[in-house]
Length: 158
Image (tube, rainbow, N blue to C red; front, side):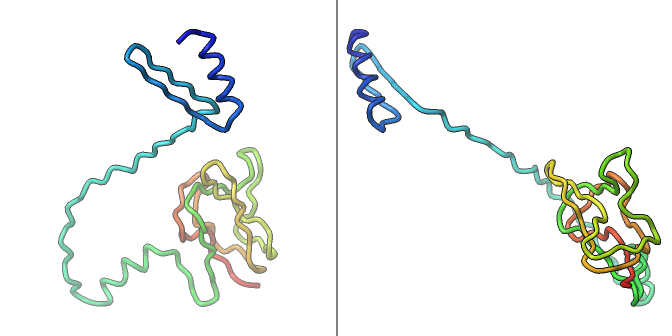
């Protein structure tokens, strides 16, 4: 096949909606592709390594076993509520490192007021108060990772 035939073939292919043409003879192989190549993204799943599970000892006394679990959670009484993270990400108390925090302990915030930012995949998600409340405790430190459902603030409804 000479160059004139190849040019004619390319012209015919570009005038149609054909995106790929392949022709093979005993002496030659011709492959014509047009249009952008599709990008293929491969995402590797995190490696899972089974871990040995230590046997759990039976609780000696019901009250003694409940005490460590209560100590792990922030102290919340009947008049205090929690504001939790709706997503997995990184907690930021201020809009930038040079700025003041959105809220401090003791602040009274209105519904819709920004309390913090949770960054997830380079997106800054503002976490807002759902109701008017007083900030009793800030449960996370700046730039600390948070999981879905982690307590961010302990608040008291006003």
